[in-house]
Length: 256
Image (cartoon, rainbow, N blue to C red; front, side):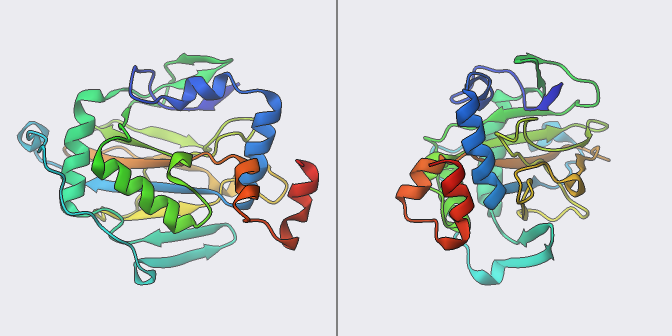
């Protein structure tokens, strides 16, 4: 059974290998965590470039000014399933920095099948995990953690996705078959630069929501670039942070 993932590459941090090695109990803990909370989804980094080669620039050694979020940035699109739209999740200067940071790391997007990383039909985009030591990446991670409220930066990883003309990721569900890793992909109905979507992948029983089917549609002209923000908290640590209350008693009893 295929599990959604990204490219196989020797990047600063590739969580796919980590997940392939996780124990059954660890996966169950992650499943229940994400049943409650969900995952922050992709930010559109770049508008379509009429000539992608002309858009390549040298990465600056000085990071750009960093963004902050406010409640005015967030609009709830749906309560069930829960989907929120976040405007200006990354600034124009941050987008340029992240694009240039990710370009030399890009590799063909892949999937995990029976614990092995393989090519997959219908997944022609390229992806790259970004180094969390980079100040802009670190800021995006902090922003995502603060938005969800219960996360620490170490619970989050950032990945850039690139679509050349005609490239796509066909309709799919995010995460793994056992629910251990909800993931999001670049989604947009309009080319809104710097915007993000947040949604919940699993239902209250920890099962995959069938109404969260989505795709990374082909770039129509030039290059389309997006950002994935992956959340993977540890339930035990969340309990220690004082997150849970009486409404979460089921999860505490299921995984003491």
